[in-house]
Image 1 (tube, helix red, strand yellow):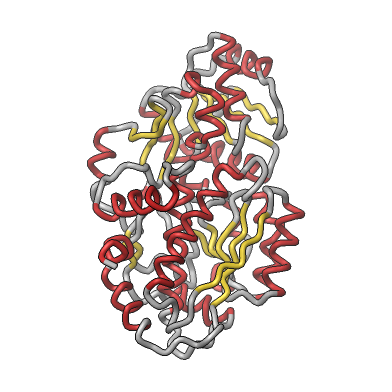
Image 2 (spheres, helix red, strand yellow; image 1 turned 90 degrees about the vertical axis):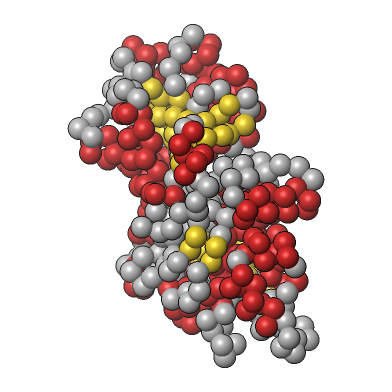
Length: 399
């Protein structure tokens, strides 16, 4: 119990402990949907997201769940495929879950959003970062929430960093998925804000295995940095192609450059790559140390994608905080939506300190001040700057 209190914060621990004294209703669980890519090419970050969610729910249920009712996860594998994701969303709506946590792929999520919005079932997105997700519906009406850093804040964060380093001749390599399409627009907008324009742009489908010709074209255009926007093995294809060409320019991007498919697939060609991060798996404070040690005890190994696990974990507690604002036990969609928009207590999370993370007008919990620049070093992700490591001792709040 002491360890649980350290991770989730004393306020919620006290509320859950009090709820544990309420008489449990036999078989009366609170069904919570979970959807993500737990098999297929995106499982490297879908699986840790699920592990983070399950770890949080186990802790919550250990101290009483919601008013004596345990949370029961209803898990659906979308396989990283839009049609499968749509079917999973429809099944969750039919099973009348009170809310859903999920989606890692922007294209998959976009195809399923209407299901949650029309059924009035809140969706909390802990992984997918495509900017359009929380912009599809007017904020006051939207049932789509997110506690991942949308690309419209990741892209300018990375662009500002590379400009500071003097890398202003940017080649953009973006896949043709919904994620790559939205990310390309965000990078181009961030460059334009700095009065810059990409010297070369390459689009490619998932599954491509050779981009050397495109990389040579970027080299010929005078690029001194490659900004990649893709989620899978293609990031490694880019890095390995640069190595084969002997083109020693840095590779930068959003958080997928922290994924195993890139780091393990590119090996030494991945060294030095820079990416935006909300969470780096180093015990920089008590909550993060407790979270990391609890994960290791449960799974016996380090997280494949720490950001996915940490954001999945925090999403589960944010939902629980919201549910505790509903005292009459009537967990219909509009009530849960209103509760998420008006979470009464501060949640001292792993990624951030969440004080009013959502509102009627704002469905994104993560702001740019929560980002740090990560760097691949010796096959793992660490802080790119010593000052970020020091700043990370203090968990950031929304600005």
